Length: 115
Length: 111
Image (cartoon, rainbow over all chains, first blue to last red; front, side, top):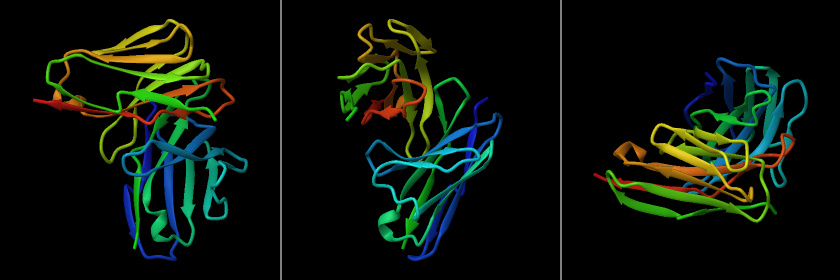
C-alpha cells in the first residue's frame, strides 16, 4: 500500500516552455501532498504543501507564479514549472501523506532538464 | 531555524559489516522517520518512530527514537551491496508542522 507515482519520470525542454508534472496516490486518498526539489548530493528542499480543494502553501523563496500547483482531487496533484529556465533543472519529487499517520510516501521523482 | 544533523556524512564499509548512523537536533521532535534513497529515485520510507524510547525493526534495520526526543539512530546489520544509497532522517514536531529532513548519510558497501 501507499504507492505514489509521478509522470513523467524525466523531461527535457527548451528554455521558456512550461512543464507539467503529475503526482498520483495510487491506492489511497491524500488530502495533503508535498512538492520537493533536490539538487545533486543534497537533501530534499520543500517547495510547497498542496491541499486538496484549496490553494497551495509555498515555502519562503519559492515563486508561486512560477511553480503552479493544483490539487484537484484526493489522488492527484500537479506542479507546473512555467517559463522554465536552465536554473530550474533539478529533480522534483512529490510525496503524499497518509491521513493521520504523519508519514510521507514519496513518488519516484521527475528529472527536469531545461536546455 | 530547525535543523537536523546526520553523522557520518558518508561511510564505506565491507559487505557483512554492521552499520550505525545517527540524527541529532537541538529541538525536540515527536516523530522520527528514516528514508533510503537510491540514485535517481524517490526516498523510500524504512522506519517510522512515534514514541520516545521506541525501538523498531524492519528486517536487518533497527531504529530508535532517542529518550531526549532530540535524536534517533539507525542500525543496519550484516550489510549487503543493495544497502548502498543515501539515508535520510526526518523529524516532525506536530501534525501541523512540516517535516524537516537531515542532509543524509551516504552509504557505500564494498563487496
